Image (cartoon, rainbow, N blue to C red; front, side, top):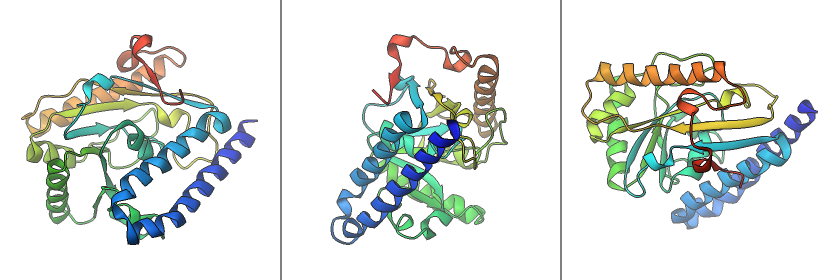
Length: 256
């Protein structure tokens, strides 16, 4: 049954993405101002199929730590492709920091910049950091919420990678507090895996870290929070624990 449900959702995912990528052509050329809303519609459509087809629900806690308006800097764990579209639903003006290679994907790639995403050449060294900071300053001035995955790539749910310096550079350049996010999305939508496991993906938005932290302090504190999230997943499959502990009455379910 899991294999069949996974096949149905994977087919749904790629059909929706392909159809909306083709449908984006007139928006790109004639109405680019509609691109952000179109991107959000894509994310909501993907999310709408998760429950009925794959049996996956999404529970979000800590939304009170997100600003209601204005810019923000969000440092999220990254375990799954799910993480790459959920913030289009959760935030009003999201700007993901993404690898530049994604811009080369036909039809899909050219929509990244019109929708407000920040593409970075990860092999560019110092010049890549400078480009990231320039684009982040533009996003901040436009009151966008910047989402970065400090681990740089998807990790297994039981693993925390060495954090890359981009998050520290962004925090220092923008002066924004860093909002940590832990998730267990990889338990249900594993990295590069065909199968999707039914269950509830948990996203815990934690209290912001204060601006002005020294680079090493910031990276150490984020690493500790991510490890606490990994330990919580290991200790509890059914009930919230550690960073995922919450008042159930304040939990938002994205499928509702």
